[in-house]
Length: 123
Image (tube, rainbow, N blue to C red; front, top):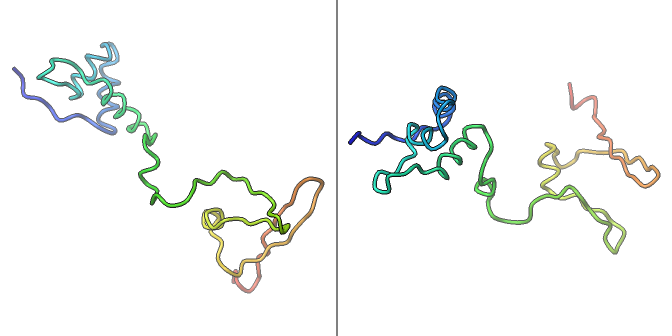
């Protein structure tokens, strides 16, 4: 019986899959280390998950979050007092800091904010 190999990940996994494209997915999973010797079968779920991650797609984007608050949905609504509040998530994503100023342009059914850049701040 051959010694089990550590499952390949990242570029090594992608390269091995490319080299063995003529094989079935089960065989590819086995030669890439996604194999359970006690069940004598390929672990296709872990193999596919590793392939997805190797291609740069996070499977569990929630793990990078701190677990607080809601996810931004890029929509706001007008409050009862007539105000519109843009949350900190959006301002942080845009790199805004306290004191940044904006010019408000009103259009038909839209509002446009244009950041005012102070000449002396950019020098």
